[in-house]
Image (cartoon, rainbow over all chains, first blue to last red; front, side, top):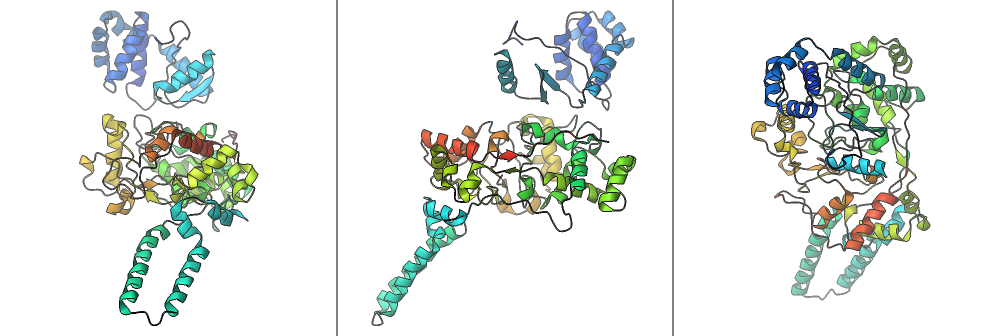
Length: 128
Length: 401
């Protein structure tokens, strides 16, 4: 994103894995962080800390990334963003997507973690 | 002059000349025998010298003979007698190929790692894996897999029928229980009817494998420029491709192993390919390596730090880190390369071989520095990417029941 500042936009959709205990609550946590303007920080932190993503750990992490813990915990416990997550899940199913992560770069589908160079090549092509 | 004969006469690889033109060698030997017969008065010392000469000649020729090679154009795929091709079976196999029921959590189908849109691979160094796990090897392309006499990088299956169930059962690939899969498919009326019509009887894992194999036998690349060339049409290659062919069969020595109609000898070699750093840097990849070694009966699996390759199948020391020679058709589509995808581009692969392979004490003796010039390497790449590019089967996503 830094390499293409102002040229590209990243839209994140949530697709918590159905057989993982904490993937759904982790999606909630990232959206609770978004409310406080720290989605990316939390998202990165959760990837680093995975799979230790139980409720108590998430609350601890919220403090680590500098969030208002009380607000964060309230959001998490009330599942404030459930509708958004369910909407995203439905979108994935409707698009016949089952693998995470899946990327669409100007409509070009890329499945799975790939080296930076792969994304760079596609982005360069799409920016032409 | 046709195909193979013409090929032999064109080869500039010195080892090939010795093996490839037996009539010349025979003539030379015949002349020598006549000489011996006409010199009956030859003394013992001379006879002993001659004996040593032939003994040495034999020693030199023997290793070359064991690496005789040939190239030929692609012939139609042959199906086994007990699993003949039928349109209905192929269609059923195609549906199964795209069906996520084949994976334990319903998120993966065969297409996940063998995508028709990307050369029937996933274009990753290390293949995609079952969610929360990591794979440890590269996903081989399925293009022309129908011609292979051994499947997987370590050759643990000898037919597409025997290959098909492995990824489904693998904990880090599709992670499916086959008893469960049979029941799951039996709950789909369309499948029940298709299996009954095609095979007779109920759905079994063996029939699932047979249908998948039938479909995979349709995934071919044919009518590449090299096919016409090998059939005698000398104009089918451009001058640059032709020069690349000369390097392929000559100075580059590629044809030592990349021979036959599918450009593979189906044998296994230790090339000293560097390990993918993820093998030890990513604990989940390490876990997959050690798990595979464990279930293969390798007792020191806990301390394993490299991919043992074919050894896990044969338990023969000579197979340590040996991997199957891959076919080269459509090679431009199927990167990253090698069993662990450690080379992103063909340039890297060619440079690797140009240096005589990698560092390993059990490296194949066939490898030695090639001293190819920059231009020769580029020309070889042109041959590989253009002359081996044919018409690849186009598969459209079927309607999965």
